[in-house]
Image (cartoon, rainbow, N blue to C red; front, side, top):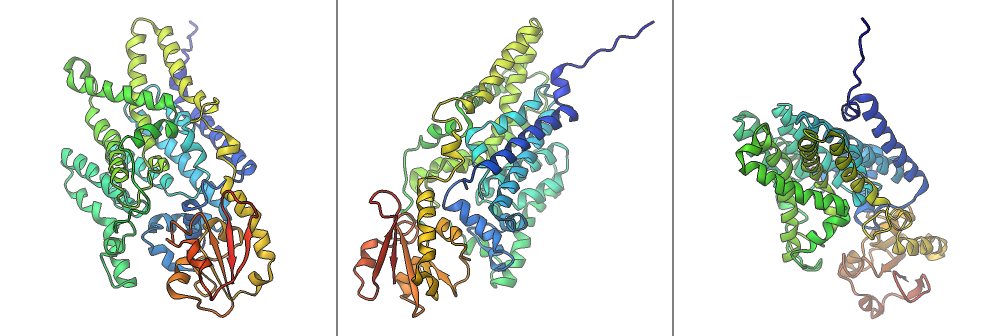
Length: 483
């Protein structure tokens, strides 16, 4: 008798390694194409500065203990940064690929047939995709958080506690995440791993005692503790408005629907039947996102911790949105397929395509390569000015350069941590010239904000002379050269 071969459902095949590997390979190939074809760096400020900290970490080991740059990020990114900004982009792409894989594994742990959707969903979040090609810390934060979630689900509690203990040394918001893991350990009566949540602080306390003579340097030297209103404040609904521009409108809408469904399922016993790990879904996926999101709502509303209302900070947690969204789609598929199997597949695939096609539309929240993956206007103006500055005799003869614009220093290949050759504008304002042959490059972007230095104060000085203004147009970023 001839045996019939029963082909597994497509969704099941997509969760297996051959096809899952294909999805990851396609994502990696497209990322490589972007790296080769587009020269953007994410932004001209934080992205470049984080890269520079990592790039010069071996030359200036104190970079590994910088509160603003984040020690764990600098340590892990430093090898990749030695290959230039391309190495930095590859580092974040690898983290994104690993995050996508771990999300799929987490969803598979919940026995969700649609777990494979995690990979395309993550790589089609508009802002998450194009800011991947930057030097920002959010991608390492997201990966470590997702990895720790997976470890908890697999009952590797000690490993999860150690990983999450270092999260505050990647981004300060890690302090918001620690209580979520403490709570899940307490709920599961895993009391001993709680002590490992202090591992990161113990390691860096020992390092701080050796380097600074301050075991608690992570608090006393925290770059974000001091109050400052120079970065502004704003509407408490700001991040609600910005979230769709980070994830795409369909994903944000589905996330809201998933939260409502989670609440209903949690409250109605008949619906809760079979949802054994719903508490884990709330505490490990939803709670960290909510704490992080609403913390930034408060920070921006009251102008705390140097908040600028930047939507990119949400990149550290938006991958978590995928977990409840896929759970919701899986619920829809299960409910509908009990009577209408083909209709269930049609409905779910239509919702899936709404998410993955959105970034390729013409909407303002979609990905526009020339706008999002290429240098912005201020970077192009800096690129115009850089060769003109480098060609000047005063630049070549200068023993000390005063400059605060990160992207210009990157273009000029200046080591920003060598105080013997370069210093910030604020140093010139406070200390005056520290060399008889110096050049001041004042920029209208970072000079007034980061250094609090008005152009008028330099123009009014009798001990310096204005040489040139670059580029020679009145609008946009300009550089004023003084000697």
